[in-house]
Image (tube, rainbow, N blue to C red; front, top):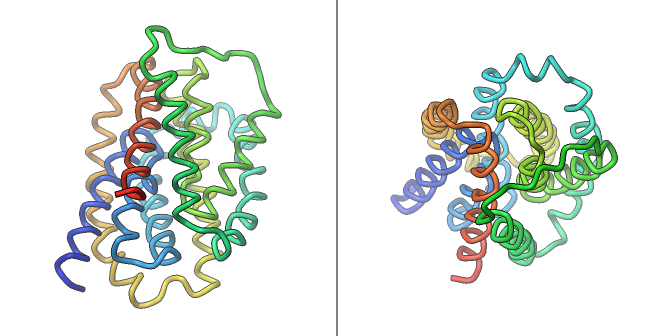
Length: 247
């Protein structure tokens, strides 16, 4: 492993781990751009998915009470998400990764730009079980195709007037379950070869430490501050992904 590879893997692990600890999502959208510079797409996705799960388990622990308080709400997202994973994985070998990332980036920028600078945040409070299921399914597809399962759930949950812990109690375990399933399917396809294992020896410990720093910042946020963070995060993720593809 040369110096350039170590540098890109380390920077990606720090960025992805911190964002995961802070918001419960965003590992792939912040780390994948760095990893794709030095790794092939399947290996990069495999590494990001595993790092997301290991860092995400720390975040699940801090909202465990909220998870057990409303398990049915979580299942509305998780079960359709599991159905979307095989479709995402099947697209991984046929879709152009650059085109996909640009499309996702544009959607994130439009959403984050529209809501991020409004004085008052939207508050969509009525129950929406079918929308929840649809968002979960799309998240599953995105998890399989690019380890970005949290992008669309983060957009949707940021306009729900829930506490930061309630929001994270859906977003974090959703990502962990979807990406754990993705990891198993990727492993069956031989994605975790010697190159992937070598990269994981660097990215996992760095990412776990960075996630702890992110969790410390999360604890200091207000509920409204966390919602606004998710919206601004989508804008930043979109700009970062677009820049990595165009430049």
